[in-house]
Image (cartoon, rainbow, N blue to C red; front, side, top):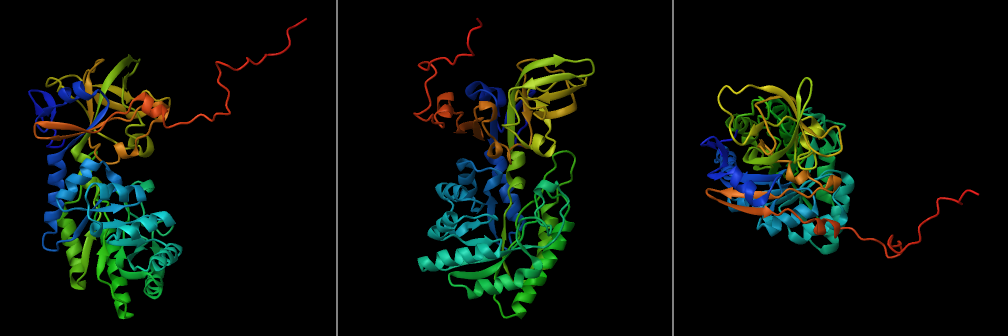
Length: 436
């Protein structure tokens, strides 16, 4: 368990607030984040590159809560965004436009217009059609947009196929063989100014070798561009650093920084990074309560009140999350096999299968670890379940930073056309003529 979630007197705490105290106040399930944990992870990343003083653009898609964004903004972070909604969130949280980078393969004209209006740091262009569209929009406004060409380096990252983004057949970026032509086009088109390159090869990477191969290819492109007389002043090295969900050895930031330094220091480039998961995952928990324990022949089935709509990663990726009792069991407590499942009507709604757990009972609280990234942001109201609230803890204080909506609020999102009949007033449909 992360150091920001210690056991005190055999009860799990978030910093110095007991989890049962929060549960009594907000109900379950809920997310809880540690402000100290978030800040410590950001500072650790920044310290690794203290000499370079890079632009650290927190990847908003990992956890987009406004309070989390405000916390990082106060530490000097920028934002890596992939939609107009995330742009609006970053600005609302107080992140300066000059610290915002817009990534993503499908930016629409309204989204690009919003980026131009905000005068953000740069747009990471991922295709020639996008480049031409941005040029037309910027020229019509009479402005010039800084752009970085996102390079697809054709490097396979050692991660889940659904979160690998740097292979030649992936949808992301411009093929490395076409980068020089795209960069030259950006220099020729009105309204766009190429300022550098960008790369991102995937998420949850625990091996630095794919980074090395991608970065070396990117450095080669910088040399080629400069030899062609084109100016390259910036390099956005993306994010993707992994954490240890289940015994994986996460890369040491010092080793990562040394790799970056060795490859790019000779090129005299302004650096940018887009860390997400590595800053937030281990600073968050999903707290859930046991609803029923169904005893089977070979194992028990523990039904909890959180579900796949609250934390999608196990169902979507087969991902592992440690699951711990909020009240620590006695030393030497027997372990038995159990499935920990949610109430959603899907066989895939399981947080753990054949997991060895201590004795568990109805009403017990459980903590699902490393849920601060890609948890709440991927949640939904599937089965018309209410979104779980989010809570931020700082020392002995806690605040609800996204409340649980009411059922009335959930239903108010829908509208019934006035031409549909009211069942209370409609004539019942005859099932057929009565038999004669």
